[in-house]
Image (cartoon, rainbow, N blue to C red; front, side, top):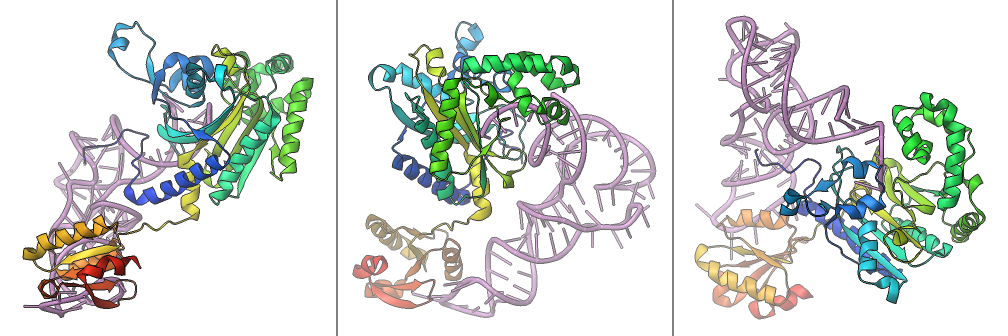
Length: 420
RNA sequence: GUGGGUGUAGCUCAACUGGUUAGAGCACGAGACUGUGGCUCUCGGGGUUGCGGGUUCAAAUCCCGUCACUCACCCCA
């Protein structure tokens, strides 16, 4: 075996497709029921798009981007092209590029597609992976947050995933976050040297992330410090209250988690995460939140926005453990008894297909027995035998595989018989 | 980027302390049933034991290196 796929990529084989299709169909139905429209953006984007939005100190920007080697790259004159590592920034880019802010500022969009991050692969983490997600652009209202969270939970429920956990937090606006960061810095100053190596860096770069460090030492050191919600300003507090109330009114169970700090810099106010216990270390099925500053940061008007992203492979993993979707075979398998009849058989095969009957036949001169075995294997509903006997009478022998019943059918009424 | 685990047939796994020609189940193919699937039985094809080197009379087995896969850290969906 010499040819190999790149590390961290996956072939989705035909036998896995039914499950993917089931997921995709459910996703589209559900999103469209909530009146979200699909948007598709390029797989490659300029580096500066992500650099500015995700945050320069995040791992994704620092070491996980894929760069495309192009002539521009060689000459070093232009912004570098990258494979997209997430989709919120491209969508905001498209929103502004096509002037939605000026003409139809309220938009509800969903997306589905592959993303690329050069990470070390493990369970639930690939280098090429798929996300589905939604973005509500042009609203500051708490009900947008509620709808987005409701949609995420509803979608998972419709897929048959009920045993997941919704965590909720508010990160406040830049103002409350500034106050809190300052307080946090003061509170931690004395114990910086006791933090893990990573958190010592975070202390300077992105102090909030110390809160969700898994290291025991860091957890204990930050445990007694007042959490962010104590520092929320009046407006953020009010917004958060409305979101919680909206969820409660609709019986969407959540857990307050004041250590939930999402990795991207652009989040404000509401952040949430949905996890599932059956997944291993990478247990987040869905992550999202509000990002009221991003559109303005990209040069648009101040605009509220909220959204989420789900990891498709992770959902598939949960689904595969719960559900089996049987692939469907063709309606008819046409058995060929003699090579001299092959072209007659092909004509019949084509006629069946013309009449919207899915059909297959053998080209390899296999024994009839082998052809029946094949038909069984691919789960054909009927086997039709067109041999010399039948051809002279203008009939075929039709066997229904599930019942084993066999009868002779006029060629003329074959399609009808199969369709009934 | 760091650490652990595992590499034997298409798949899942055997092979005592190093010792004949590396086995089994499943899968695949053919037959038993010369125009009929699943079940059963019989037979058959299939291996550079990941790769390279070393130790030894002898290596799937021990040692070194390397690659791949995998899980975890980190990060995140």
